[in-house]
Length: 219
Image (cartoon, rainbow, N blue to C red; front, side, top):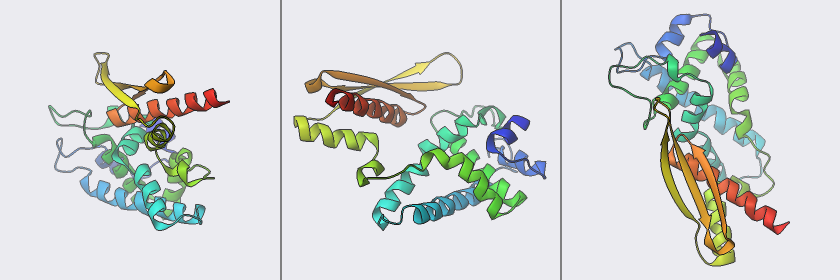
């Protein structure tokens, strides 16, 4: 548990809050659903407030799109994986972490627990540390688009075609399942690969690498 506290940058005064936050509904009637509800609201408020203050030149539509990518289930699942909380979650028999939102929901529950154990200012500090890498310096509106959208526009403009994606599942026999995506741009004779815990995440990584390949070819 000390590793968890270190990873999220907060030590709980009331350890029972952590226990509840890490308990899935399949394991006990005393579970993290209510904390998840609270954490979801806190994260949305935090992201909305920070976007509003940081990017004063963006309109509502662009702010909404940026926020949606940051609070998406894929991103929250990824953040939970980086915190290594999967092994700490109490699950009922037959329940698995793959192919669902349990990791992301538990991350939300932990944020709700941090708030109840402290206050909003402290919760903001925790979220600042956890989401810091997601807040990028935006020079152009295009930077708000995900890599797949950016790549599609470039390929359509330059080659009048679309990038192709193929995805395969990678398993090493453990509970961890990853996906590997291959992105191909036939006209440019280029291929890139990306990995992720979801199909979408692997495709996004492959698209980001393809954008870099195209950029390198131009220079």
